[in-house]
Image (cartoon, rainbow, N blue to C red; front, side):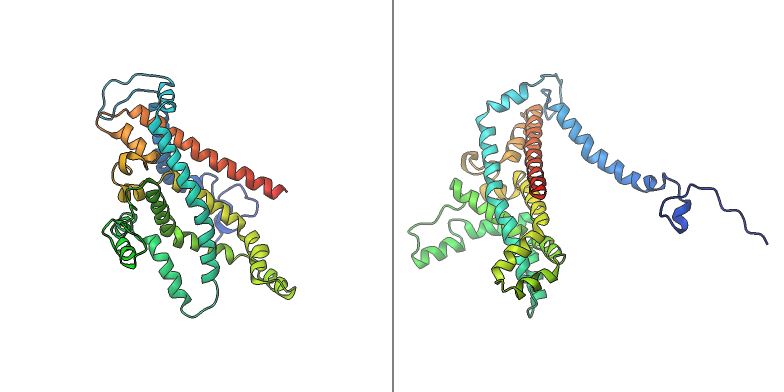
Length: 311
């Protein structure tokens, strides 16, 4: 019996087996459902948000009129918008360095071969998988005026009156940042553990033979080896910090602290764009500015990274 002729197909460079006879459009077929989902749920809403930012659309519908750049001009003259922007930027400035450094130190610690180290890795990761709302409610209970922390401080005589963790502007900001950092320690620790596993172990051996101390090995071997991961962690944590909402909402209340003093940009966008009598166009313009602020930080960090590599 003679063999049937193989179907004609274009040969791929380096392709073997069945891949040699695969049509060029086959991968696109498999990717099409995911591409449709990404476009429909990400790019279409983004384009709609940009379009609405040039209108006076209302949350409950009605006539929509084109207003050009009036929404953006109104935002630049809005003191509440600048207060929310300041809070978001301060949040990022406080949270990002801690999230970049502390998980790295924790990753170095749990990468050592010690008894029960697997248990400690799991324990440090638990906050990352816990619900942010549940964790924030627990912190709210601990930090309130009659909570365990103030009760302990008063009992020890370290303070004369309960500290206003949840009502003072700066204490609330610091507590929210601490919650964000504590919640993200485990997740970013896992990223650093993966990066530490790719550092050439022979570099540590050579540094130890040369008499380098543990600190110098960390500074001259570990840090250069995980620097790309540090950049990634910095970008991810900055994006999350600029978009922070739940921590401040639970600890400070629906208004973002007393008088809205701790309201971040997501608070402002919700207030002006999604309230019953709000301006959806103005909220969309604030969302676009938040996107540009985030994009500007990412571009600046990547450019700085390229300059360091080139140097």
